[in-house]
Amino acid sequence: MNHKKLEGMTHFIKAFQWSLLGFKAAWQNETAFRQEVMGMVVLIPLGVWLGDTPLERAALVVSLLFVLVVELINSAIEAVVDRVGLENHPLSGRAKDLGSAAVFVALAISAVVWMAVVFTKL
Image 1 (tube, rainbow, N blue to C red):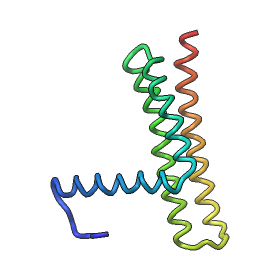
Image 2 (image 1 turned 30 degrees about the horizontal axis):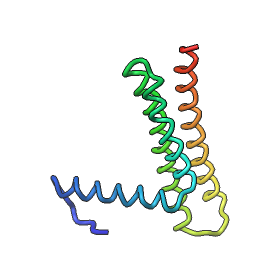
Image 3 (image 1 turned 90 degrees about the vertical axis):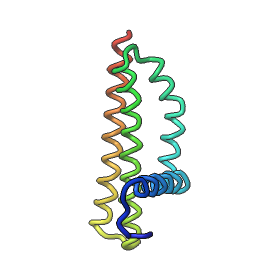
């Protein structure tokens, strides 16, 4: 990776390319990421359909995208921990467990948002 300081449009283009590489790595290496994306293929259109207002639609979609954000961060933590060493270490386990807990909380937040919107329609 080139660590030369990039500016302007060159920085924007490179950042976009690095983001695409990150999505590709997540898709190829992370089962949970693939499962969440496949769920969102169904849930995002459903959220757009279920939401009566732009705010409801945004809340439903953003809550799902938030899960992906946290999953990507969790995957990055796991990759760094594995890069440092594959031997069992309490701090490595804690880092991975905390990342997993963060994904769980993001899923819970999304579930609460979806339940709130769906229950207002009953």
